Length: 316
Length: 316
Image 1: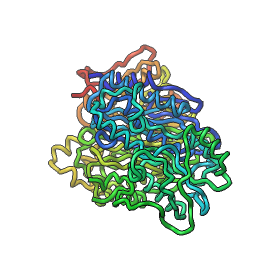
Image 2 (image 1 turned 90 degrees about the vertical axis):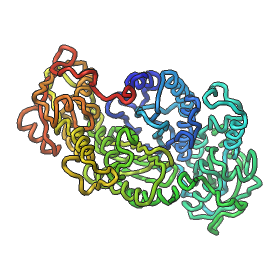
Image 3 (image 1 turned 135 degrees about the vertical axis):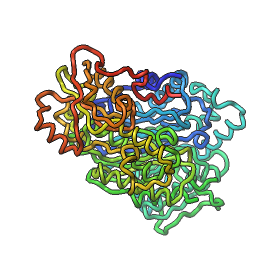
Image 4 (image 1 turned 30 degrees about the vertical axis):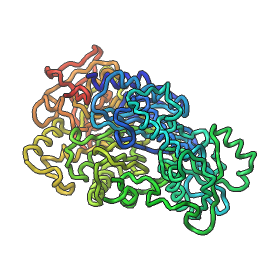
């Protein structure tokens, strides 16, 4: 088996780049960066566990894409420009071919969604297969998209198509294809929403200074509506007929694995012309799905059988 | 079993604080901080895997201490003042009592070594027991302690006592005590170097503007000497008799688990008076152990049977 030092050297050769903010990349006790003057820094970390968040045998390029995409989605939800990031990978065994595949996925996802991001460090250890990514990004503090700014009368929007992640996962399961045999360069459109989720970084940037609240939909629309409403101190009425979806309404509301943005706009920012400009800048369709109201609570949702959102620790 | 939301809420109540740089702590899609003007930011991440880096049944307070300490040690090695940090925890099962213990360890380690640090985010998921911590810290870029600045004629120093981590681990193994029964508030001095390593944050701060190179000794002195020498482009002669140690010389050179600082000082910074001031500021003894020389390579080390440093992936 390759040594840790050889594997780390291979990762560095493939992945390290210097950017305007990076004074020192991987190779010392820590990285050193120079924050852009005046910018706030957004920080988030998310872990993917084998056989919970991805099939243990998943092709490494697809695992890498997913690990980055779900983290970049959190930056998108804050309206942040992606910056330095770190990857902590544990695996029971690693081969140069696996590392090559993992690097391919990292590079592809960054090229597609975060060309400004730079890998500045990480950790590699033997253990059960897991990937923890820590992302950082930049935004003027006053322009950061929080969950807490929605006002009564604001209109509620969502990007993309909900339930598509779940539909992709079910299609993949039904196909009988081995997750290890899948190639990042040839993902079927039927599986793509699940295998290669697209973090809405461009839309997040476009929403700065416009959206009053924003969140990414990692846990299903119903749960995220609740988070936005609670944090903002408003009620929300969903027009469930308007939700752009693939599959059942329940899948769209609770399916998870979608990584779209849910956000609120004041009426002045929700003209047809401005919405078209947002969709064009963000590179994704956006759809109005509801309204912020004074009366607390969520309205317009069908009964969901207690499945309103994914809870990593209460699931059996 | 407690839900993720309940556990996260408990963690937040216990751990979250706001600091001068924290605009938004846990609870949104990401944290938001305001970097101090002019400061460079140091970033590092390190993962601890159950039954590789700690006994799976270890009391949660001690696991938390260790997870933070090994990460703070990387900040110390850069001369950085600890700042915002994130904790990604996966566990097969979690109880409120376990979370309480984990919080106790986090709070104790931060209070002792990094009162300026703030938990700004993290991740909690069901999976094999692992902790990935990402630390950030602040240092003027020109004062950051790198591995690469040692010059011919610089003198080589180490803090603390090497081999103590290994001796503590062996004493614990021999005691027959169950790792789950150990209490952070009553760690025997015989086990303390292993169970509650002390990151040398204060010494790292004291070395800013003085040390020409610095590294922390996570992998054993022999390996770290090699890293410093390679990065700096100098040779190093070790006076192995001078190495402050507990146990055999081989344990001191390759034992790991010590988390002391290894650093170089130019002769003008290595007067008895200045060394005494450094030790006082750093709160730990420092000892001269060698000299940087022009001829490449390491000298003065005994044969080590190929065990010069811990390699996470080449170990069986």
